[in-house]
Image (tube, rainbow, N blue to C red):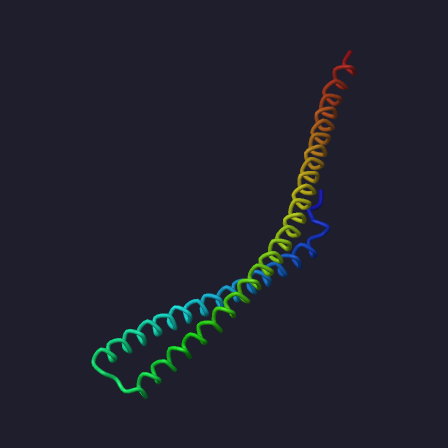
Length: 154
């Protein structure tokens, strides 16, 4: 009997490659979001440091110009954090959309794999049935050969 061949094997390989591409895209988006998260944390730490520095300098006496400079840097850092937060939210939405795509592609691949497994099971059953028929044929022919000489002797 010929070897098992899944009729939709090319389609399965194609869908699987598409799934891998979608997973890679998801990983890229998550990496971008992690980078933005890190930048937000750094900006927040910078903000805390600027505020502490301003308070420390104010307690020692500070000029109005230096105070305005600190206020400008703090305000600028807050705007930067706000922009990064908006980018973070946008990336979170992209992650959610991409995750839905990955789930859909995974279901498609899974469906084809189940179909392949079902076809393989049917193939195996057919092979077993043919093997049983061959064994029965061999046993029958052996029995007939053994009975034929006994009948000729009688």
